[in-house]
Image (tube, rainbow, N blue to C red; front, top):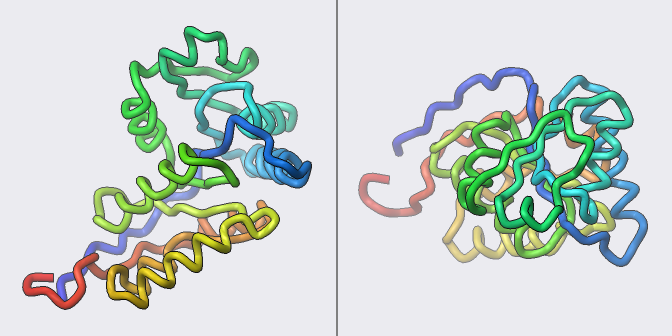
Length: 204
């Protein structure tokens, strides 16, 4: 079986956080977002995120800024034109569309974290995980598992593995932790899987 290069990762300097523009039903979600923003800033890591002041996005940015951190927002033109840009960011960029926004965030980041969220958050998480699986980049991704939010994801990935669509190494490559410091430690210690994605096929 051919192998992907398991490169030694540089220290975490910039972490992209994917999160909702809503708050969720429990105050636990905002508390966890605040704790993550504070922890990122305390480690001297730059927070890269979607640039708005809405929902958990605003909470994580506000917390990092309040703790003296650097926060870079990448917002798309439509949301910028609607006045959704966070007014207190260290700096921001405006991307024409969502695809360019996601690509720029991925370019800036050394690793990725998803907070609980909806379609956009989940799509961003799985996109960067897929790029890691394919070897298009060698960057860790993880989730902050507040209120067990990501347990269904873990079950789904286990089912995909059991049914022959996913290798165990790729099932397990997303770091899942309930506390920000443990999550950041896990991302810093992460190593890329050394297997290709294909299962039981010639040339895999």
